[in-house]
Length: 494
Image 1 (cartoon, rainbow, N blue to C red):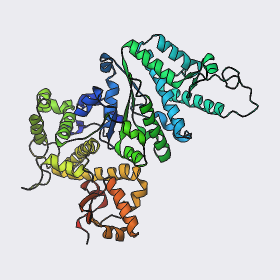
Image 2 (cartoon, rainbow, N blue to C red):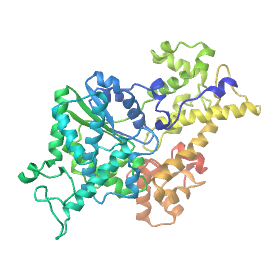
Image 3 (cartoon, rainbow, N blue to C red):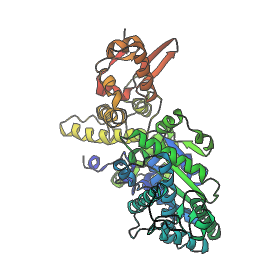
């Protein structure tokens, strides 16, 4: 019992375990490609590991520096998002967001340069222009930087809409007392004489500074789904603008934007029409296999020192050979959850119960399942239901009981939270059969045929349904991950 109480499989949300990730982070091919600079855009489902990659990348700053790469992160790896203030006072257009991203990236870069002691003529000029425009705040946290950017752009918008009768400075073209040294267009000769420079000129200075220093720069952006939650229009404007900035900065060879984004959000943007998608060639979508999931479980299990010490496990030997990992897995967990000649092995059962209708299974639910299973196992022992065999630490019953919790949380915190307009249709499935057709769904939902088809398609898109059969006879099968919470009945609707 004491051992079970000490075992943890980590947090299912990467932001909550950023400091511990390095101890059991799975160094996948996705990570290698990111670390080697082969990709810029990292897509993945919710819980697939985007934020874990982001957090580990942030912790690898010194290793990247040794590879002549400076890394600056545009968002806090955990805690409140830097951009949540934009939800209260949102930018009015996509164009305004483009300006925000470009200025914000420049200023956080200046702060990164200071930390690493970068200094040369190009950087000194760049820093001077930003300081003259009051864009380098005394408090250099990300929130203060974003606030300074918002204030500057508001002033710039006001200048661009000057009304007759305002006292204008003959050299700058700005109202008297306003000191705006950066413009988002090419300045006139008179404006250049007054020290006004374009944003493009500033990025040229940044590129020159990096070349002279002998380094390249990575700017990493994550948690965009959290930053603009509950405001679809704001999220769309922000992301479309971000990818336009990604395109605009491509000619500056020393500067690379690294964007971590949920694939469903990207798909929505593209479906609305987005020409910038043609410029994205260095991208990957995070994916997991049975082998990598088992490796993830073993790494997290072996991060428990009490477990390793009690059973005398050679961690290096286990992690160096997949067969050793598989052997260890089936030593401490049941070989099957449902027992029988035709029943799957435990790891296959776990994946089949976790994956959604699109066949996607993510570490978030795997970690959640094992943590809940440990809790269930402890409670079962406390009431005298100890069904452990040999060296098992989790029984079959504990895994099945844990799945009920995972099913509930998956529905409430992912599906209902992300797609509140679909909640009523999902809840009407309570107690229904696990396989449906359009006509049976129409009866359950009590809506028209076309609306039923549209809702069913959306539920398929988000993975609540798995489409089976063919286009002439589509059947909608509900994955195991959602069945417990909805008390679904095995079988096809008549």
